[in-house]
Length: 380
Image 1: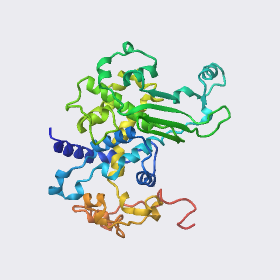
Image 2: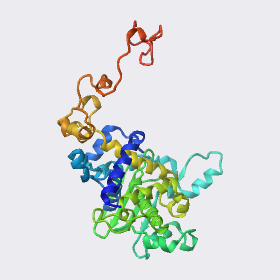
Image 3: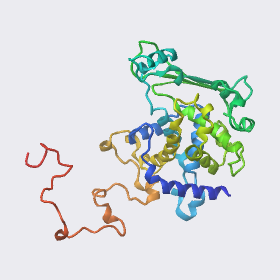
Image 4: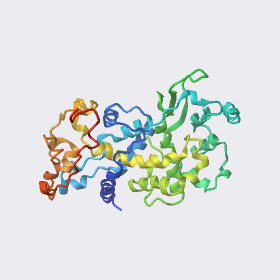
């Protein structure tokens, strides 16, 4: 299959599915927050950044083959508007961990047996280190983390080992920042990602899932290839040099690989290796759904046209770009904001609705509706 054919299929799939998924966000981010995340400098290590860039590229690829038929506005893809920034931001902001809810493992067992036990979580659930130096292979690093051997895996461990790579990553470490028995409120986390050429250290007030999910995607991709589910050759992709196994899949295979997380049973198959990586492997299905939906949230909106007012409240935003220059307006043919357009849109659409005649209206005697609040408006 040619790459151009893949792009057309991918775009049609995105446009078809965008209606139901466009509002998905793991962090319940506002539109302004999404805009701010995409406008800010990308604070991430190369492996995390390139993995999400490869996902963006697979779901909303550049489509230069559409220029002659539909125009240049249909060429740019998700990478052109830096959608990976919002994915990384969103996955790093959807779960706050309260310090007072974290306890040592021994304390948790003791509390569970007492009448005062509560929903405490063991500290070890949120702390982990993956070190790929000196252990042989990247799979060995995961086996060491899980404290199991290759023989404990109910799968083709040798094939998995052959295909698994985290790219340039040498160490990923997550731990609490300054957590003790007196700490209260939202816990902060230290995230350290080391490669041979650089070390990225960040302190985040939410659990740093973004980097962990990319390790998961590499592991799932390795199993995907080990089972022979890929339809295209696997090879390093110069567009994503910081990525691992996942980025080496073709665009279509990346999407097929992600789908195995939802519908392929791979979470159960790899549970022994996934459990030490993420506090709750069950959320991974929702992550994949969000990954698909969030691209529409960023790509098929007019956020790029608001200029310096992007992060303002809706009533304070101003369109600072000519309507014809806004990507989403060009693709949809929307003429741009105009007085009364939102209220009168149905008359502007070919084949739209006509106003019913007054004599045909069947209105109740009491016209008080949900938009009328007792004590405000009306006769009061």
